[in-house]
Image 1 (cartoon, rainbow, N blue to C red):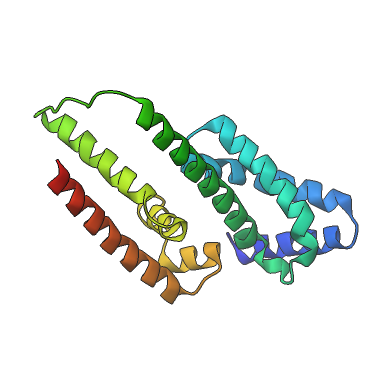
Image 2 (image 1 turned 180 degrees about the vertical axis):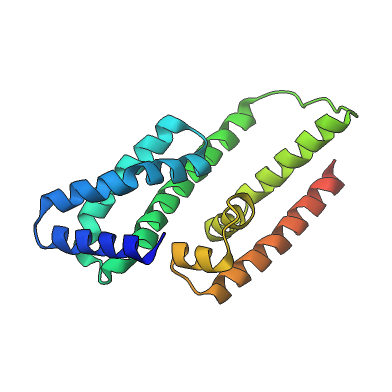
Length: 185
């Protein structure tokens, strides 16, 4: 996003903080689709993504008066979307884990190369869900979304060093988790 867009957002935030409700309508018009897309990227469900975007706007309305630097609206609001999306994913994983305890039987093994690739992909995705949420976000933004370290730093409002550290620790934990899964099979 260009500096001009950050300036427009900053002006709209200041206007809304000053009591101009039309400024919020303009922010919604500029950002709602972006929020839906970002949430969808994480949750992979269009309806849930729309609900998360809507819930994000509720949070923004409640907390925008405390936003000290209006130029940071983009990263601040996207961080809210990401946090709400990852919270939803986390709650879904807990539900799936509970349902698995009621399920019976194991999947049969296939030697087909495609089945092995799919199994590996599922293992990696499952392993990612076992990481702390801050490491999950960094892994997903870096590898799936191809964000740079600086972009991740801005989106999560942490230093680049923290992003590098989270990425390193997430990789190490994934190696360990996947290594143990290999021994269990």
